[in-house]
Length: 354
Image (cartoon, rainbow, N blue to C red; front, side):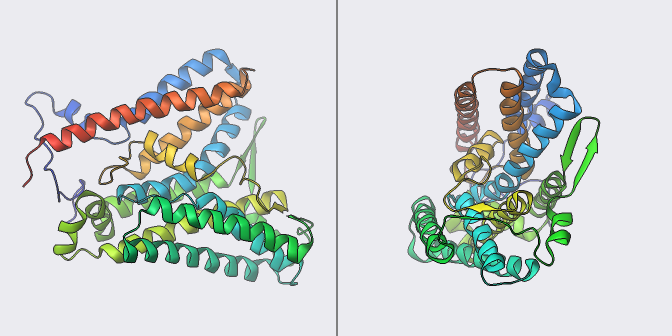
C-alpha cells in the first residue's frame, strides 16, 4: 500500500501532539522552511524593487528558477536516496557540445544528434551509478571525478575536432526549427517573455512528486536514503534504484544543455550552462528541505528552493545592488536551511527505532 509518507525503515515518525495536528503536519513538510523563506524574500525585494512583480521581473525569475529547478528536482531525488551528483552541470555542457559537433562537423540533422547526446548522457549516469553501487566509493568523489573527466575531454575534444572551444552557426540545420518549438518556445505577456523551460520545470516537478510519493519507485528512493541495509534485506532494489537516479540526474543535465544550446545556437566548451553548476543544484535541494544524510526531502521543496534562489538573484539585480551580495544572501539562506535540517535530523533520531 502506497501512503503519502515515506516508508519508515529507520525512525518512526512521532505522533502529532493533541490539539496541534495542523502545526504537526506543517512541521513534517520538507518544503516548509523554503516556503517561509520564499515569502520573506518576495516581500522584501518587492519593496526594494517593485519591478520584480511586473511581467518582466516575473519572466526573469521563472526562467532562472526553471533552469535551476530542472536540475534541482533530479538532484533532490538523489539526495533523498543518500547520494550526491556534482556532474550535472558538466553533463549539460558536454552533451550540448556533442550535439553541436554532430550537427556542425558530422553533418547530422538536429533530432538524431540530440538522441545520441541523450544516450551519451545516460551512459554517464550508468557509469556513475554502477561505480557507486559496486565499489562503495562516496558518490561525491565519483561524480567529482566524472566532472573533471568530462570537463577536460569536452575542451580537448572540441579543440581537436573544431579547432576551437566554441561551436556556433547551427540554426540552419534540418530539424532545428521543430527543436526550437519544443525547447525554446516563448510567450510574450506584457513586457515579459516567458520561456517554455518553465513548462518543462513544472511538468518534471509534478512527475517527480507523483513518483516519489505514489509509486514503489518512490518508496525505494526513501528506503535507500533512510536505511540502506535494512531496505536491501527487505528486498528493495537498492542497486537498480541508485543507478536509475543517476541516470535521472544525467538526463536532467542533458535537458538543461539542450535548452541552452537551442536558445543560444552555440555552445562553449568549458563554459557554464547559463549560471548553474552541480553545487547550485545541491544548494537548491538543501534549501528545499533535503537532508544531506538522505531519507528526507521532496521534489516540491527543491522547486520552491529554485524559486527562492531565483527571486533573490533577480531581486538583487533589479534593486541595483552589487551582485556580490547575492553570494552572501545565498550563503545565509543555505546556513538557515542547514540549521533547519539539523533540527529535523535530531527529531528523527530522537524517536526510538522500530
